[in-house]
Amino acid sequence: MVRGKTQMRRIENATSRQVTFSKRRNGLLKKGFELSVLCDAEVALIIFSSRGKLYEFASSSMQETIEKYRSQVKDVQTDTSSVEDVQHLKQETAIMAKKVELLEVAKRKLLGEGLGATTIEELVRMEQQLEKGVHLVRARKIQVYNEQIEQLKAKEKLMAEENAILTEKYQVQKHKATEETRVDVHVLEYGENFDVETELFIGPPETRMKKKWPK
Image (tube, rainbow, N blue to C red; front, side, top):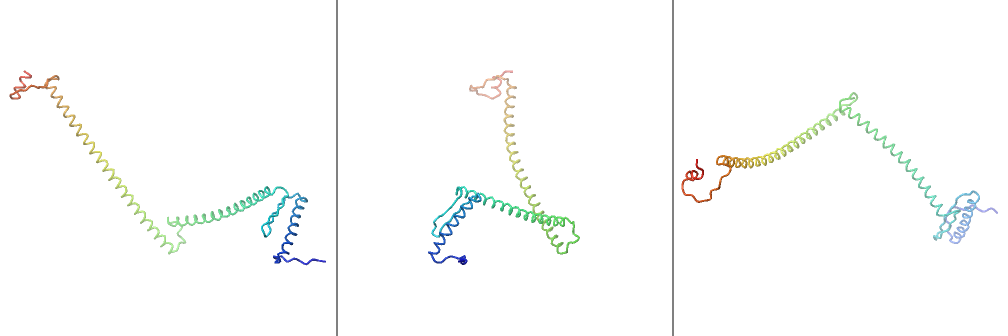
């Protein structure tokens, strides 16, 4: 008697569903075992029932097989990512090359080159761009001039302060030198060794000097 073809859909009857699960689970585990023995293949099967119960089969070590699987999947993902990255970089390079080409053409036109096929609208737009650029350059030039003027003013102020300090030092040194010269002249005039007069003397100064240093 030929069995009818089983429809691939969920079995609604719980008992029939459990019986089918048990039969097919055992058959799948058996097929895995046969495949590993007949073909010397590394087989690992993991099955969870609808209630979460675990059934497994491994021809060697389940953990080692899982690690090998993870390694293989990671390598495949890395290779795929590398190919996608290369394609993305190629696209970005092509876009950048096109932009550079357009910028080179625009630069030549702004320099007055290759204007043969330029329309009047493009010429007007280029003229406006050049006028705007000239305005910005002049504004920047004025700003730089003002900054340099401020720096020179600050430098001039600093030099004036230093000059005032040096002038003050010079005046002090000059006054000191004048005092020392005055003392030296006095010594030369009256001799190196002279006594300081400490006694009380009544009379004109010239009388006192004649008495102290007779000619």
